[in-house]
Length: 504
Image 1 (tube, rainbow, N blue to C red):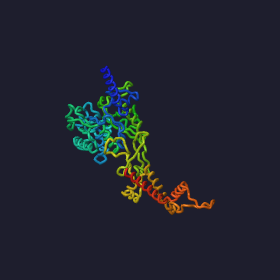
Image 2: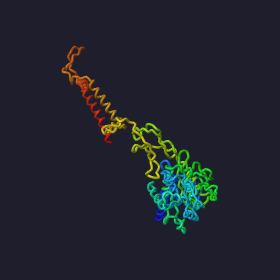
Image 3: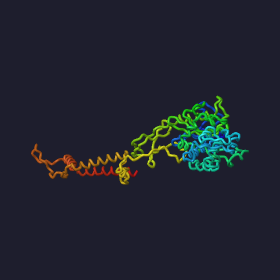
Image 4: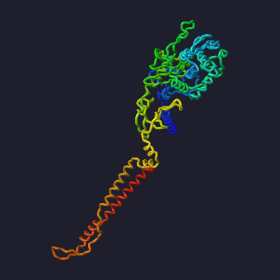
């Protein structure tokens, strides 16, 4: 019996522990659950290894699944090459119309099997604009090497610049090893064709690439004029004419187009490890979506490729949950018990139907409890303000004695009670001065009184004398003094209560 009892108790405890400590998974943190809610299924091999979505205004994270996972970015590395190209154009190092001639080594590099790009021919010239278009629409490894040599003379010098810029932008887990992200496996057996030494693969994280894209979108938004192109024709009307179609399935005109998608890059050189960086804007809300490691060969039962399904699910879910809206109008506001004035409207990205609160930090009104940021160096959701008080009022507020006094008279229930007691005490105290002074005579001097009915002097009875004594006592009480000291006592009691409130 004891053994059965112990067995039952153990079973109950195990069941309790299972249901108590089993992890609760929110669909917002698990892509499989999110897909199942939409009655879509993907094999485990078809799911991405990592994904992250940020909004491009302040870099707040709206979705995060394994964004710190170490990855080989491969041809997503072109995002940094594009960043440095746009920076060089901004600095006047080159222009869009500058032409670059294909060298023998670049022709050989472009012929390595499996590398994305076009058929570069030695002696052919391309403008900087055409090479940028090739990089963005085709992931051309040869085009990125041509840009790298033109900007920094050698690919090795350009890679050094890539890593220096990565450090400056806060990409703390990123190391680039080539302008295009070529891996050791890509060039195996063709090392002599590459105008640089590549001994290691590039390293990064999805979060770092989301941050890199954020900086690119903030600084060079014109990049989306190219990334949203559906097709590209180069060397028109020559024997080298080539036409390329975009490999981004989400831009306008494609089968799986998502409204507002205008870029940025898709690396589908390996169908089993397809990755994408997508930029989408709807109703003022701009999203940057990074999806890593999708197996495009793992199609759904409906014949839908994983990347379009995953991208659409993640992006639509983000737009369904978040919005870009006005958080604080221009004008005067009371924040943290201080009156402040803003001349601009504060807008930001928050959860739909959420209530927002603010706090003051270093002359900025900052959104309290904001979403996590992709980087601590980014500017939070905030707006500048000025004090609504005049200089004289500010001096008074900064005065320590005034602050002490204001703290002491802070309105609470105890404050109200203390003030009430003080007022009652003052009223009683004032009343004491209106009570006339009286002669204090406890008993009459005569022991007899004259009875006019009998015309005789009569000695009062004991009972009559006691009653007369009582009346005489009430008439001779010191009401003035009693009222005076009672008012004084009430006033002092109220002051003590105020002091107690301050100390508490």
